[in-house]
Length: 113
Image (cartoon, rainbow, N blue to C red; front, side, top):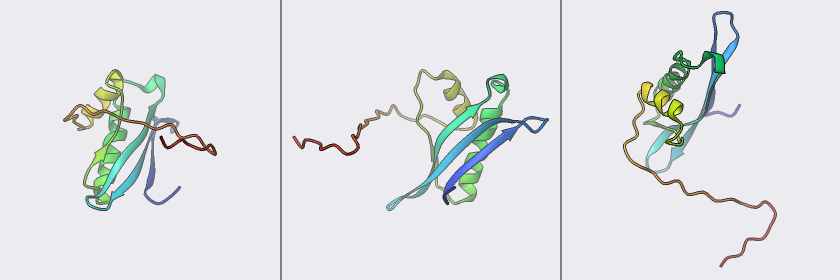
């Protein structure tokens, strides 16, 4: 794994993996470093028990320990489970954001106009 890339795992009482969260430190030249929560997954049988919230909170703690000034994640507003998990772990959604994406074709010329 690359420096600044993090994987945290959750295990049940029998030491079986039941959840994971990944984060990537992103450094902005004019702002410093923040943690991007890249992926969160919890085994279906373990959902609704606080596993996701604990993983997100643990990533936030790690981010703070590593000197990050903040942490962020993108999710769909319709993903109620994700929204509840992130809020329960202390996240806030202060504004409505529009995400703009590019689909990049590998190896093909792109028209400039």
